[in-house]
Image (cartoon, rainbow, N blue to C red; front, side, top):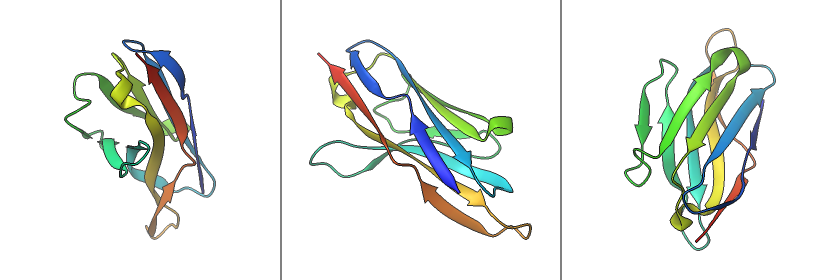
Length: 120
């Protein structure tokens, strides 16, 4: 199983970006998927999580600005980021809990990260 994160880039403060996390490989189902970020010199932190049923949870710092969604048919999760701030600058990673056997065995995977830079 591989997770491919994409969509990062350089944007001015107040702008928007949409990140994508596409899962591929031997997948029977995908449970929770999350976006995390790590800024230089800081610990990795949770940004947003979406469950298999569509329930979402956001970090307080992004509530009202970011929206996580998923397209189960495409095994893809999105993170729409609006009203971006310089403090959102970080490498963004996606992580997914993937069911990899017919009996329901789960394993967590991480994508490679995509850089988001917000200029002031």
